[in-house]
Image 1 (spheres, rainbow, N blue to C red):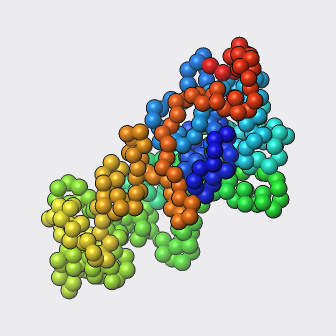
Image 2 (image 1 turned 120 degrees about the horizontal axis):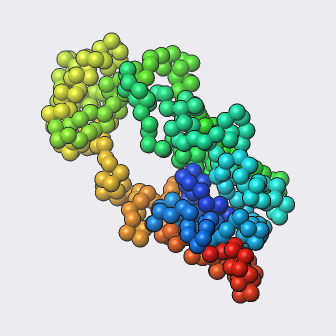
Image 3 (image 1 turned 90 degrees about the vertical axis):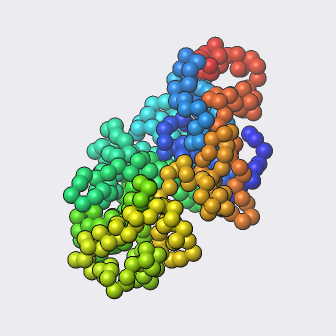
Length: 383
């Protein structure tokens, strides 16, 4: 495999079976931090099954195109697993086993492998074999219910909660935990990451608020769900938006000052009975200025007023630019690797390789010669 590269995970070898959203995101995080990832892209009739050109979720790894419906293709994957530290798949329960690439088969070749699997519902349970997407998983976990306006239906938060936060990131954390344990036991294990479980974990703080009587209203009636006027978004004079998060008394006082309001005339933000009137006051004051005017007035204060930037505006914000929060990779602006490390910083991401473009190089490293490669082509194992 490739030479070691910078990053705290330098030297870690990962095999990724191609999939959608959470599994690639987990492997992207590992690759960003220095792991060497080889992605197994499924090919059928010479065509790539999953093809989004220049997809940032596929950056920083090599790709080998295999037909894993052939015994020869499966054998190549198992040879890669023999050299790997981590093996990742995101299929429905039982699919990897039917391919001959389940945990038992992989561990027979390499018992030290951490076998990471990400599914929507988990490897067991009544819904384990049912289709679903992010919205279904967060609906079941309780994470979707609180998101939305009072008296209105829940609003899907794109697919951030299950696919990425409670999916890919959840799996990556589990893989790293299993790798840490392996230092003691010398053995790999299976990480069963479910997007229902992961998105449920993201709601942990709500249970604490509920237990302490701090989350009693319905959707859109609580402090952190837009129910409180001092923790919400507001439209500005130019049709854009600002985010206000002035919860604490001193921060709310700073907000009142930024908006040039008379503190004596502003309803108490601690009295929920006055929230409707307070919302009117804030909306009126904010609606008289443009977004950038308000942001300029709040700069250097603790008013907790910030612009609501689109993903396409965010890279140009001075704070994000100063920290290198976004990078340009092959002409595509995208989030940079993170978090930051002082001794082993992550390398600038490399653009996604064309699907299957590293097949011959990887096969050569595994010991396949030209005759072997010819046999794989004849068998339909490679395109």
